[in-house]
Image (cartoon, rainbow over the protein chains, first blue to last red):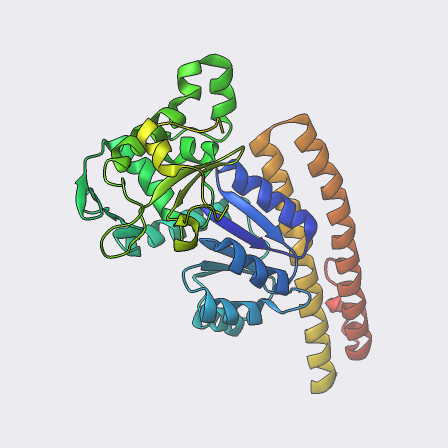
Length: 272
Length: 84
C-alpha cells in the first residue's frame, strides 16, 4: 500500500517508516498537519497513519479535512489521549481505526493488514483507465470495447498499473512484490543470481504492450476516449498513461515520444 | 483536598501519563524493529534511541511524583506515597 505517516515525533516516525517499508509498503513521512494535507493531495495515499497531537494543524482538523476532500484514503489514528470520547469522535469523523499509544509495531501492522483487507473487499471490482476496463470479478479486460486476452500474470501486472490510475509511477521493485510476490530487495538478489529473474518485469511489460497495442493503432477511439499506454519512466518504473489531447498534437513537445511506435515494436525504451 | 484542587491534580497526572505514552511507543517500536531487522546497526540505533526515550520517561515520572507529593501534603495521606 501507499502509506503516508503523519507523526511529529521524528524517532517514532522513523521506526514506523522503516517497519512498513520492510513489509513492502511505499511510505512517506511528514511531521505536521498542514504538510499532511499537502502530501495527501499530491500522493493520494491509500492509507494515512495520523497522530493527533500535531504542530501547525491538529490531527482532529486534519481528519475532518481528509473526510471532506480525500475519502478514498483510509485513516488510522494514533493517540496518546486516554479519553473514550475522543476515540469515538475520531471514528465519527471518519477514522477507520484508532490505536492508543503505547502500542506494539506488531499490533499496528496487523491492523493495517485488516484495513487493507477491508479496502479490497469494498473496492469497486471494475477498474477503468483511458480506454481500458478491467472487471476483477469476471477476470476480464477490454480495450476500446475489444476483449484483451491476458494470462494470469499479465492480468495481475495490468491491475497493479491500473490501481495507480496514471497518478503514480510503479517501480520495478513494487511490481516484483505485487505480481511475483517477491520480498522487497528481491530484485537486487535476483540481479546477482539470475539474468532471467532480473528481466521478468521488462519481459511481461513488453507482452502487455504488444497485447494492448493491438487495439490502439489510433490515439483515441470514436467517442474521444484516449488509449491507455504503458510508459517507461527512466530510472523510476512504469506508468499507465492516457495522453491528454494537447499531448497528441504533433510538435507540442509534451508528448510521450512515439508511443504508437513503441507499441508497434513491442519494445521497452529503457531499463528501469 | 477540595474538588477544584482534585480536578487540577487529576489533569496533571493525566497529562504526565500522556507524556509517557510517546516515549514508551518509540522505545517499544525501536526494540521491535531491531529484533525484526537483526543487524548490528539496528541494535545500536535502538539502544541510542532507547536511552533518549528513557530520559523522557524519567522526566514524566518525576512530574507525576511531584503531583503525588503535593496531593499527599494537601491531604496528609501518608499512604498515598506508593510503593513505600
